[in-house]
Length: 97
Image (cartoon, rainbow, N blue to C red; front, side, top):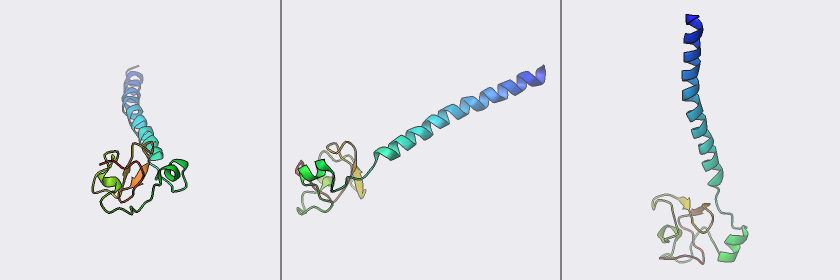
């Protein structure tokens, strides 16, 4: 009986560690799936005139208040494009200082 109880407690401990790790992995998959780059053919990108390379040197996505990425990153999330990644050197008609 002692071995059975010990075996059960070991399995319970392993499960207690495995469940949180699985949820972290699933959250990582969800995050990865939601970080797609904006395509120039997207209807919203077309409507806002989004381009990956800004025609205005002083107006780039990295300098916009809607840009959620780090200034040093090549791509970052944008509040306008539902969290999709935009090029830091890009621009759209919703650019705001």
